[in-house]
Length: 490
Length: 98
Image 1 (cartoon, rainbow over the protein chains, first blue to last red):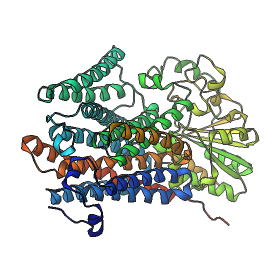
Image 2: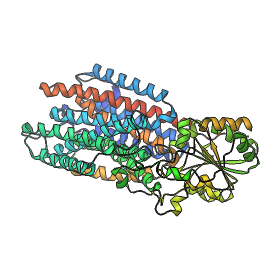
Image 3: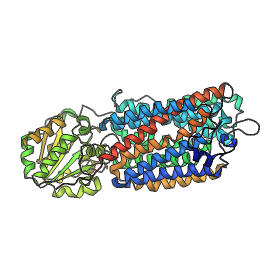
């Protein structure tokens, strides 16, 4: 029985029953998936500028619609009502969450979504293993094809790693679990052992007769869930941009592996796109911290942020300012550069900050925002928050575009950032953040540094020379409250 | 399709991905992650095939249910991912001031 979802396309794409085997004999079907894949490329291409990005997102939606409709009309569907209900439940839930979520919670949301892609990949892989006939991956003797077994083994393994890793990332980002690294003894040995076991078992799985292979298949799955968990628990909160990007990449590779199993162009193109996207983002994040990908994945960074060296630095002189001081001095300023960090997101200070910036502009100041690539908990986190507060994106600059301007700046206003303005990254070879590109705030005539207290140090656990500079005024308060007070004083 | 044709598409798509993603402006990296999330849910195609297949024995029945759960999860992602991307992108605007 064939359900004609869309009459015309059903006719156009109507295929012999062979299509159910996954071997798309009808060129129209292959073409439809190709079109979907190309639309996904255009969706990413659109993101090269904010103007074209909205059209890009639409292309993505159309691509997805084409992929789903094509699949539905070219397969004999025994359970259309159930599928409809499944899409409705999932779709409604996803839509509501997407509407309600606060912009500051984007990192959690993205991590949560990654876990779903991972789990979906696992489910598809297991379903293909249990019912290989429906996926067209049986050979003449009724065994699963060798190449399909490798794809299945890798696919479920990557999917499972994506799932359990993203769940941990979600819990850490959402605050259900401490962001501090959890270090197991011998973890490198354990992790490498488990990884080697997964690869070895996948190889073994590919050569075993189907009847005997189920234990191996399930073992691969369980080990993969385990390794995803083990890989992420030792990674600390501020390394999360790398982790989230990496899991993004994995979710793509998982989709690609399933695409191989199904011989589906849309899935392969998408998987490759998403896989490269996540990999590039991870690379950008690592470079912005001057750390190697391996050292981030090995984890443990920020674990030893010792209160031990916290004791000695209390003695050094620093100046404390009030909201009124800051307001008065910024009124006189011509060039102001604002540097937001994760603290701004925590305090939800973006709206108050924008209000402050608007008032300063009315006073005739030239206000710019400077964003470090690793500020926040995911790539582009600060940009989204500023956009939410309707800060003009023309006023928001990347590190390399604005760093030369600090020498001319009258005021550098640091709100919730710390490590990204620490000059130790340029001068102190022994510092854990040495070599990380940072903002040259020390060149500004006046620095305001919003911080909750003098006690805490940045994520890297290093003291910051900027606190003690002559031109620095510490504004010790909650970021949001401080911005509101400055607004009042203006 | 034979393995080599599929693999060729995959390799080419990796290169396309490489160049396309480098051209994404850093300000839009969060929407990029959200939208890649949404499109990677094209894995729903696999879940639909599993859910749609006529049950063949126990394995087929289980596979059908796993497929249906997969459809639910992927749908969360598709609708949620595109909707949240749309919401974020709507915020990036140039204001007409004075």
